[in-house]
Length: 102
Length: 168
Image (cartoon, rainbow over the protein chains, first blue to last red):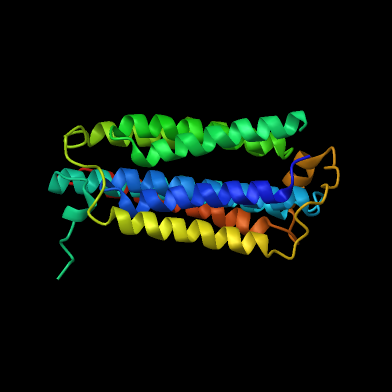
């Protein structure tokens, strides 16, 4: 049987990898990829706690489904912003998008 | 070590290796394909946790829609992605330090956790899918978050179309 802590350590590692991707990558699309990794790490935690808590209460799975919906919305809006910015400024490098930097 | 532990280690290795490749590989199309491998590993974990519906949703929604959306976006913004410059910004050592600190911090919290970490889980009920469906539409459980999520998706749909529209 798999102890709960293995899932928690795995999701901590996945979260840290995603955080590195968000902070270090230059490309705006790659930053969104890092955010996806972090959301998946959170989802592993939610489902693991559902399974190891009281499985007849579905709160953990419902939470995971809400996270799916939020992730889909976030990716759709984020990628449309990136495409719109690319169309007007011909770049997707986050460092060069400094129009609002005073 | 029983079969479920072997499956856990194999899928954990798949998840971690492909996640590292997602954040390090130069070509973004390859990064999106490695993201698909990561998401597939997470779906295997959902099966191990007896959340079969979530595993199917993971494959259909994440791999089938979100990852494909990423590949489309990469191809629509292709021009400077294959250049020879570095794919990481100047602050990447700081980023590495911050994420290592986050990993150590979370692991520290997990170690000192009050929740009993080594207990055997209670057997999952046979009708989890039925319970999930009832929980999503039951007024005293989660019907409000469910409806808010649908409004959010509608708003994201309209917003994404509006933002990406070519206004000329």
